[in-house]
Amino acid sequence: MRATGYTGAMTANMPSKPSPVSTIRNLGPKSDEVFARAGITTADALREMGADAAYKRLLETGSKPHFIGYYALVMGLQGRPWNDCQGDEKKALRKRFDALKTDVRPKDPNAEIEKILNEIGVIPR
Image 1 (tube, rainbow, N blue to C red):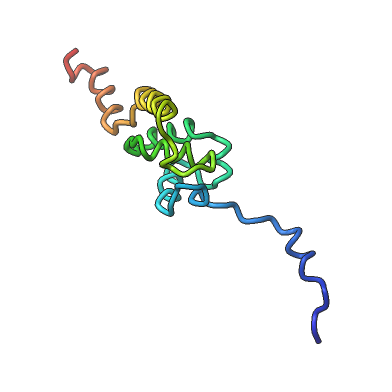
Image 2 (image 1 turned 90 degrees about the vertical axis):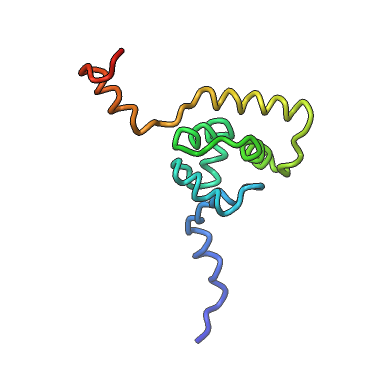
């Protein structure tokens, strides 16, 4: 017996699978891993955060800052090719990037122990 005409109704009610970060223009499969380490696992979550907040999260979780990666992300979220960034726009993005780098200091694994050693007087002040 052959099923007749009922194929679309079942799939219409099923939730769609979230799109990975790499579905955003300029971001490849490696981006999925990098953003996942920062707790950003879907393209929608990345879009909702915006480029600056997402990039700041990457830096906070130990990613090394790279200007091209930053502006490729900004351009990608706008649906533009990474190399579309030029002139005054690129200069403005460079200022934003530098500000993000300044605001974020990666968590130093030794910072907590140094704090404790300082409190008990092992490290001279």
